[in-house]
Image (cartoon, rainbow, N blue to C red; front, side, top):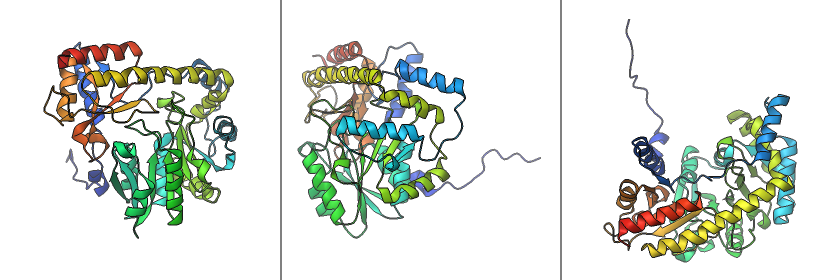
Length: 397
């Protein structure tokens, strides 16, 4: 009998077009060091150290006991869609019809659905560089072409309306933005966002805005892109503000005319989001639970207010103060510990020599990636203090 151990099945070309996620490689290295007994402080992966609060856990337990674990509508539980709609009214002063809300298996599924619905082969989608790497890979998975636009501190590391007007051509289909952004923690100024939406609309394109960190805004009341027209598509999630990363639950708000298309795609690609997670998420919008989230938001702000200036004392530059999420995008080109502008070597040294995990800019695009590192302050305040002390010793500060 012949045994085939390595069938030479051809992989799809899109696999080669998607690059590895370097943050996960660093996480694997850190895990090996921890296995050998090293104490590692994790400031790499963007995951809140807070987990789902007790009311959410209780809601999940009650749902299990009731046995409500069957498939839901592809668009999501109607009570959850209504609760999300009410949240827009209370938090943002926006009236969003629940019929426009599509509950998804996390923001990743939401972005995949959006790209499947809107991007054809070879369509170009504009996005800032740096940006969350998976965003460009969602476009690639739909056989489109992400166009990364170099965006520096002067633009708050964000796309601008001037970029749209300059770079739009016959192949451009739309823009994919994030506000606040991963990796930079910066938001798009509302007036600039309005101009972007208007510029895209004038060209018959789509605007997708990832707003998964919008609940974690610190310096001003957040403004949703939905304020600028019901043709805008927004993505949100229960992972970050609501601290439910592993529950894999998110949502889209889509134009009224597109709901049917998104429902058809969701039915075929995902069937539905987790029923258990949906029932649990209803508890997120109770007043007592929202009070917990508000206290946690203020704790994230306290961490930001500590770590950003602390980085400056270590020799980093923070060219734009992050106003949301839980990231600092820091310029490491003047850190004397390694050769200037070598973020990969620097993060490797910080991990192996100080037990501190940060991420080099190479994950987030091709615009000056060697000069930047991303720090996630989604870890306990005492650990942030210890990390600063370790790096000060490493750098001789």
